[in-house]
Amino acid sequence: MGKKRIYLSSPTMHGREQEFVQEAFDTNWIAPLGPNVTAFEQEMLAYTGAGYATALSAGTAAIHLALKLLNIGPGDVVFVSDLTFSATCNPIVYEGATPVFIDAEPDTWNMSPLALEKAFEKYPHPKAVLCAYLYGTPAQINEIMTICEKHHVPYIEDAAESLGSTYMGRHTGTFGKFGIYSFNGNKIITTSGGGMLVSDDEEAIKKALFLATQARDPARHYQHSQIGYNYRMSNVTAGIGRGQLLYMEEHKARKQAIYRQYQEAFADIPEISMNPLNPDGDANNWLSCMTIAKSSSMTPDEIMDALDAENIESRPIWKPMHEQPVFAECDFVPHNGDGSSVGSDIFARGLCLPSDIKNTVEDMERIIGIVRKCFGR
Ligand SMILES: *Cc1c(COP(=O)(O)O)cnc(C)c1O
Image (cartoon, rainbow, N blue to C red):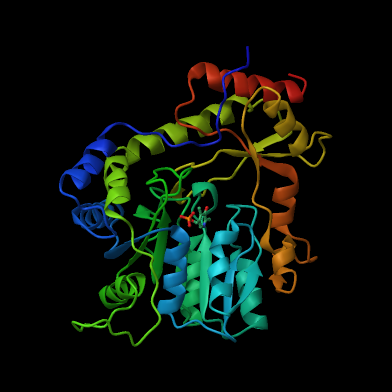
């Protein structure tokens, strides 16, 4: 008999989601608009403390619209996290702009303020700084925003992985000119797929709604003065989101407990370090990750193989963007003085551990036992 499958991070539904979806069916609001969409936006604003929101079909769409709203186009440079998922930077290329990848720093695994300063010396006039908060850990937001303000460059927060994380008591995604959230299938809460753009700029968020719904001018006939997109969230999926949001804090508490359990379980193994948490923040611990000390002969692949052999899902750290064939032509600004990349080092020595909130005590013991065994414990 095969061993029970343990997932990295799979959707956790509670039943309330179906009530909101049923309501959408009962009222025939099966469309990319409706009461669930509006209510989900309002409930997300109440939860995060952001000013205004537009619910969208994906987090990637939210990043794309943030760039559009900042008039980013051909010839423009955007400073973007190097150690992240490709969805963070793809929209820069959709608009014909040029990403310049900013290395990670060891303290949070996020954009290095030091490398960001260096990037400004090389490219004094980027159109935006776009930073992802990896695995739910907030970046050194104050340091990054101070640099952005000094250079009068807008800051965009890719909070796709960090919904519910706070920095100095405030929700990630509410600091910059724009914040984006994702409700993809494996995120901390999910609508199967979806995203949201937030900002304190009411006009910009209205414009986002306009662009996301085919940029139709206010006229009875179909008139368009701009190119639009079909990026709006559906009323059905927004219903799932409303139900999920009720359990957001519960999900966060479970994710944090998983992180602490790994941390305690590996405390006696000096070769293992958990992913860093920002002491100025409260991370949602979307995924718990570990790195293996340089002195160890173990590799992430060996640990992932050992887990896989027991039907347990794990995953490599995001491969840095400057190492991706598709971005081979793009510039990269390293954190280290010797030109070596912090992100490449984390990628080479790290992996994401199963962080599914449905994992039982026994599941966690199984995972921990396998990893410990890899280190001869
Ligand atoms: C998931 C994710 C996105 C994209 O969100 P989608 O809703 O899948 O489009 C963007 N950035 C990061 C860092 C992500 O992890």
